[in-house]
Amino acid sequence: MELILEQLPVVVGALNTGFLQTLRLFFITLLGAFPLGLVIAFGSMSRIRLLSLSARFLIWIIRGTPLMIQLLIIYYFPGLVLHSPIWGGGESGRFLAASISFVLNYACYFSEIYRGGIQSVPVGQQEAGLVLGMTRHQIFFRVTLLQMVKRIVPPISNEVITLVKDTSLARIIALQEVIWAGQAFMKGSHGISGAIWPLFFTAVYYLIFNGILTVLLARLEKKLDYFRI
Amino acid sequence: MAILEVEHIQKSFDRTEVLKDINFSLEQGQVLAIIGPSGGGKTTLLRCLNFLETPDQGVIRVNGSVLFDADDPATRSESQIRRKRLHFGLVFQSFNLFPQYTALENVRLAPELLAKERPDYHANKAAIHEEIEANARGLLAQIGLADRMNSYPHQLSGGQCQRVAIARALALHPDILCFDEPTSALDPELTGEVLRVIRALADKRTTMIIVTHEMAFARDVASQVLFIDGGRICEQGAPQEVFQNPREERTRQFLSRFAQE
Image (cartoon, rainbow over all chains, first blue to last red; front, side, top):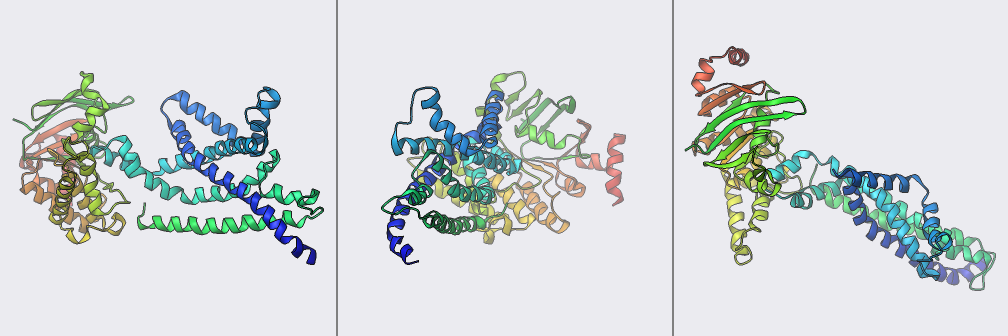
């Protein structure tokens, strides 16, 4: 116990650095996947058959295979198979590959949630907009969007909380996120070796961050409570 | 001259012919009631007039100019249709108010969006918005909802919602206001308040087309009645004729059910 207290400041410092990388991956994934998901959702609902088929094919592949394999393929395939390492070396290369894998993966999940949200808005809403002379663009942004957002907040919250924990999968390509940082103390890092408790301790980071997110997302849900659908 | 002329409108869904050669015209300030059994094509006809459905055949003229001609592709483009819709207003059976907006915002939204297309919008922005706001408030007061302007649809009764929907349609000053069974989703008590609003509009000589199952109301308010069944107009004429001395057996049969009530 005394030893742990002695090691604590060093460990927390290293884990903080790792968790910063976790947070970067988390926010970049959301930033990219929220809009890309909408594009894929519109693609899958498109009347152009080729477009909707390609979108659904992409969703099938991405949702049908483990994110860990997607990470490995996206990171290693260009360099090892095509002999053109496009990601560049080091941590920035790993981060770029991880970001792209996560954005693509989450965009596909979001797109299905969006699609459900859009399709659940009654067709009468769109018709009301049309007879009032609104353009399809105006109808989407002024009428449909907020009703869709209200419907999708609970399932999106679920995905967001899953994403916090999924970022740990980036460990597989040695991205220096918080799990990687915790594990390092087993092999030896910052003069500490053979310690497994820092790895267990990373769970606290996830727990606290997800606690904050849960409160924020509940607040958003409450904010949209002023109208009913 | 007739404000609305409908000629040879025909519409099929897949192989089912829903409207067969519909012809009628309407004068400025008249109220046309469309009655008939469910599934007879009444709603489809209204939806054709509002371009929610595109007729397969026929011509629609408003104030003498051709709004739609099935044989002229130029009258069928999406951007043109949007403008043409504004000749008509439509009040739905299920209100279709926008739930995230207050009553006032529901009435204001479309006029505000349309105002942005005016060439003088940027120069007179404040004045235009003030005018739209005043008009919306005036309409809501007129239908008796002055004190519920800031309520959201879920806080209003069905009758109040339908009245807001009427104000929302009126805010765009349509030439012809259409109602698609405006009271069918309401209980008898709430039906009365909606019918009173429509009656007041008729008294002010608002040109209207009303699809309804309220026979007594149709007889009182309409200047002309169409009885539609099986996609065609079986009978048309003044309400006294159609209701008291129907010429067609089918009309008699349909009306006898209401007479028994």
